[in-house]
Image 1 (cartoon, rainbow, N blue to C red):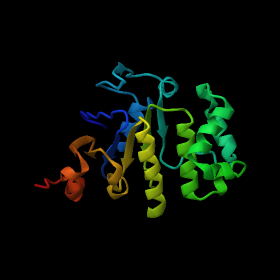
Image 2: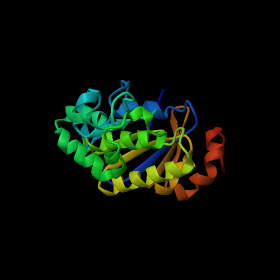
Image 3: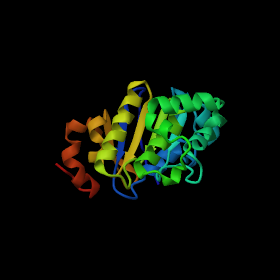
Amino acid sequence: MLHGVDLEVAAGQVVALLGPNGAGKTTALNVIAGNHPVAAGNVLLGGREVTGAAPRDLARAGVCLIPEGRGVFPNLTVRENLWMMTFTGRSRADIEGIAFDRFPKLAARADQVAGTMSGGEQQMLALARGLATDPAVLLLDELSMGLAPLVVGRLYEQVAEIAGRGVAVLVVEQFAAAVLDITDHAAVLVRGRVVRQGHPDSGIRNELAALYLGSDPS
């Protein structure tokens, strides 16, 4: 359950939502994506009220959620995974063009079954699927889960480039070190409440351990 969570993500900005297991981070993403009902408060997209909107409508408006656990279809090929995004109205050719331009490695594996690729490659495909919708807002849930630090670093470099093109990016991470180097703003969520937020270099990096335990770092 969330309590008075107040977050803003501007176009071209990467915001990290950090916190321990069970803090409510994934719930926050699902509220924004329309997958979880809102009991109180408002969700705004580009200054427009979208509270209670259906997930499909939010997706068409530019909100893209990449859930924990990759979010790809393991029994389909890379190309077939990308074709699943045609529900947004884009053609197969457009979707492939966007994905393969951003991730050339996927072009070389277009006919490979997604489940036979490495975890990092599957996460790359998940990102490519999201970008194929030309999102205004990209929501990432635990991008680093189960991946080697070097792979995670490369993926987050891609995320920074995506934000650099004007996309608003909200990243949920339990392991802050994985994302803070590309983050413009960080918020720490504990038991459904934001207990600290600001620029990563404002002291948040050094206070995380105490914040996760719910104590006062001062």
